[in-house]
Image (cartoon, rainbow, N blue to C red; front, side, top):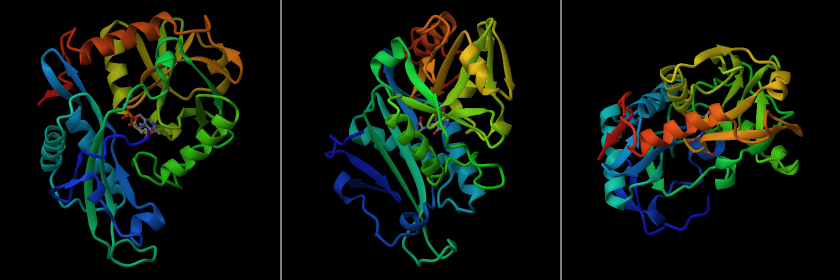
Length: 307
Ligand code: PPE
């Protein structure tokens, strides 16, 4: 993601500031210890107008992440939701990616975060397909990483915290080195967990499986949406521990995430998956997901907040 919209505004601690002015001190706690929690949210533009996908759920997760790290949010969830809409309107953005972040700012250094203020910032920009347009239609090649997700008594993965992404970065770097679009990470026990920035689903005989929350995964909001959608389409959805070899033998595999939306996986570790390209179940879920956000289908789950 390279910046080309520096004319935009950013919401920072209750003020709207110019893109260039959204600055923090280099000795802020977050710079040294990664002390931040954040969200990634998408807004879509359809014939009914611009709308944010599951805004309240994302902001609720931001507050949950903050709670885990005792980051006292200086705003209410409602205020952060309102601020998110405000910054979109301010920038005239309709279809975009939104990044609210709360972090420990400039106070004092040392591991103890409590004497540093909590700063809140919301940026937004246009962001296309996360793993490429071709990846969306055909599928991406991925590899299982040698880097695992942290064990539950190390870093709490249910917090969407910046520090978790140092782990994700190692996996992503390794994937790039090997020529893959993305990495699949295993949990501390060796079961399938998730991508470096996506949840994962496995289709076997028209049953849809996804790793359970015990497998060191982020509780993805797209994951939840896909599970709801799949059930409403009549599929059986199972959350369970998944061994690596089930990936190789699956009929279909796909990623879900705010940035990745629904991205098919066509190979894992050099083994072609199913028919070797996006499979029919993935295509149906992907199509239905986009029909909802594009208002071609009823928003029966109430996921879209128009603004
Ligand atoms: N797992 C991880 C590790 C993850 O980072 C994401 C989102 C998900 C699962 C899916 O969660 P959800 O977006 O609620 O469905 N990754 C975000 C960050 C991507 C980035 O490169 O930055 C995202 O998709 O916004």
